[in-house]
Image (tube, rainbow, N blue to C red; front, top):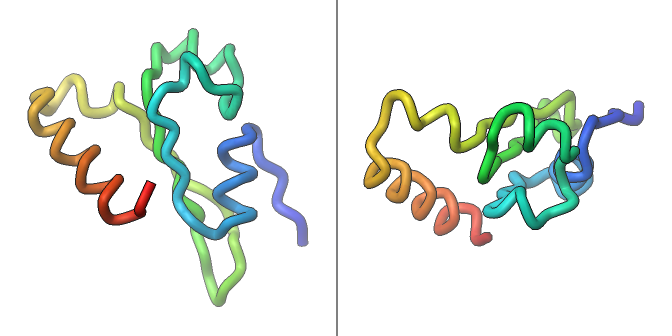
Length: 88
């Protein structure tokens, strides 16, 4: 079964079976411009959901999720941790 994604970043996460981090969505073509403008995103993480080695979907989070609840220092620590863990 082929999983159709709504973004190039989602396609990459599915194809690689690995999380995809887009640090600067403004200069990337991996996400639809309409999403970037509508949600005011600056960065996004897309993680494939894998069951028995088959990707069944993705889950995504962007920098706007943390703005209301976390300090920028905490955001930076999370970002650094994800980059270190996923090697991107």
